[in-house]
Image (cartoon, rainbow, N blue to C red; front, side, top):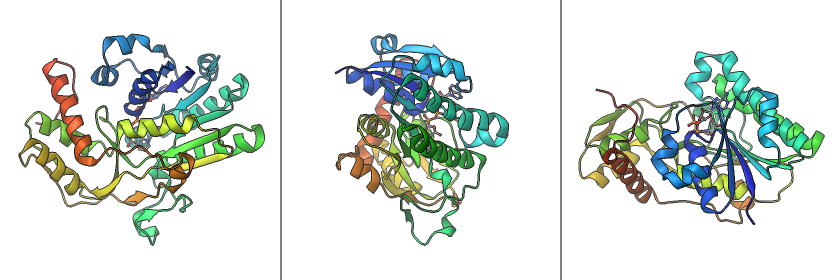
Length: 321
Ligand SMILES: NC(=O)c1ccc[n+]([C@@H]2O[C@H](COP(=O)([O-])OP(=O)(O)OC[C@H]3O[C@@H](n4cnc5c(N)ncnc54)[C@H](O)[C@@H]3O)[C@@H](O)[C@H]2O)c1
């Protein structure tokens, strides 16, 4: 049965994929975003899909605007947020968007009698890798965020918990690590995708870090959000994503192999984050059906999307040099 789904942040990377895949399932998408550029939507969908989205330009920090957008929807997938560099540059603005904005979404659910929310936490709720005795963190690993962004995401986890206990609103907080693929063009860990874009256009690109990271393909992530939003599960759950937990060099090897040239390289530096997170909670929630496209296939698909967009003269992110 077709449902009406509110997707906040639908102009972002995951939001665009969630919107596309919900439409493919026959759902009605209400997109809510403050942004003015729909380049990520245009990158991955045609004009018919684009015009099928009911788009609302609104600010997630505006309680009334979020409540109005949530009127009559069956479920909410909440993705609007400011990423690490933006929260670092403007901590108060970051708190308004990431903390107050998330409270607004839960409050809208309460007022509109929507009993479930799926939202995005982040690996940034954890501390630096040296705090843990394992490379792949369990779902309940210690929270010790070292960035404003991570602090705000931890606040979101608490917000979800209290809305469950006080108001019976169930939620699933999906916890991504490093999302890659078409549409990933901002945030600290977007460089591997920039390397794919560069390679697709025949240009060299050097990633600033060599870390082992949980690479998660944007369409797979979107499918996980959608599948989780359809499960009738009580409580405030946190479900980390797994993906391909490999080094940046392994990722770049797959990119270079796909284009037949050594265009992608990386520096030796390490990001301080844990390498990956265990996705057992998500597997349990989805009865083992966690979407996963093999890395080489996902990189091949991403290259094809970028090349087609370039051939059509679409606006693509700027490359250095
Ligand atoms: N990309 C990753 O690797 C990653 C990793 C961990 C967690 N996450 C989380 O997943 C979610 C989606 O990430 P993404 O990669 O799609 O992010 P993105 O930055 O591509 O998109 C975020 C969207 O939120 C919108 N937005 C920002 N401020 C807003 C406001 N005040 N009102 C309404 N909309 C606003 C932006 O315009 C943008 O379209 C976010 O919550 C993010 O923190 C992402």
